Image 1 (cartoon, rainbow over the protein chains, first blue to last red):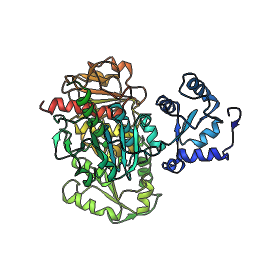
Image 2: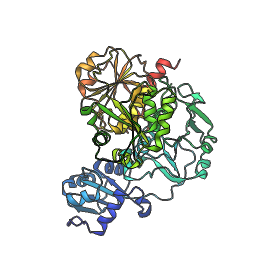
Image 3: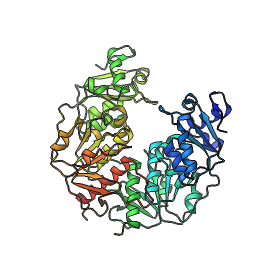
Image 4: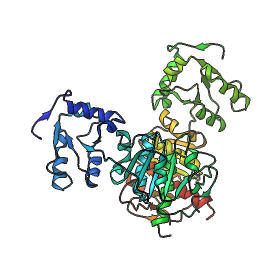
Length: 262
Length: 262
């Protein structure tokens, strides 16, 4: 599979890869995710993911050799070598990567009821969603549940912003009330005007944190299910924080309460 | 000034506004900042800024009337009425605003040596920079110093991500070593592998926090000047946090130590 270099944009495989790389929701139809760049590919391999194929330019072959040598990449995973021009055609990035991989999308993602969880309610900005996934992974959360109308978790933009966090988390998309009801851990919400101050609150562990839409916040029907509501001290005035910033503060506070030895 | 509606894209004023709205660094040449949307304009007026002009479509005139009535907008500030098509030509947004204003850029922004400060070292992503400005304002910081090669603070993208935080902060751009040396408050840096745990550290107030480039972190020459180094607990493993997420956690911890009554 490594002998020929694909030089044509009209190759059906290339057309499909370009759709996956450019369209935020294409992975849902195709059941495959485009993962680009050596950092993201290495993160996926390190978490035990097996690509359906590795796509590489001649300049990126050293990555394939290294990953095969160090055990992350099985010898029988197909490698498709493409020209720089074809990689530039597939990738939406100004500086296209020298290596990428095609991952099968894990199906049947049912909710794990007892693990530390983050619930996202209609977050729109891919950068915010990716940042929250990174914070969730860093602070010991195992699962992220995206309620309907949240940005597509495996879209290329969210993947890039997630910097590899996706591959270590249990991700559930398109979730509805049943997903929230399935959780057996306490649900915590943030508010700008009520609840205990986060920095003095006793936080349960494991728990599930709820973060909402950039403009509208968390839908009231989810707020009503929260067992705890906390608020973040803001001595500078009534500024509202960016939702990913607020999430980082909350998830860090959870990690300190669970692992900080205070 | 409110009688005529500007319907031509060739109007020299319109050409200049389009440059300001589209080019991240154009404000440095022009000495003026394009501030778009009712939220950002209202935030600027609330902080006492006086626009050189308000640019409005017929649908946005109620904002002008309201701001004049409620005192934020002086009666002698010129109002340029434009057609929806012209506003769409000026603005880079998919949904152009119905109102915007042109603010003079504050010049001669020398460092205030004794106030709570955030120092940005070559941060690149406008969303990250805007998010950090919001966190700084929310947590009682008065000044943000952007060292050379940091994203342009008053660019349209950073302004949008800042959600109005710009107007309440003292902002210094293009700063060099002299700016850092001018600070008389303790300089705090974050590290992934050394220093006290943030959640147990005693933090000075006022202080200056140092945050660095998304990939490379803080330059070693600035790290060497830090009087305190702290690190953030990450029980999930060696994931690195998004820099705006890390900044939110640190600035919140500062606010708690100064104002949290613990």
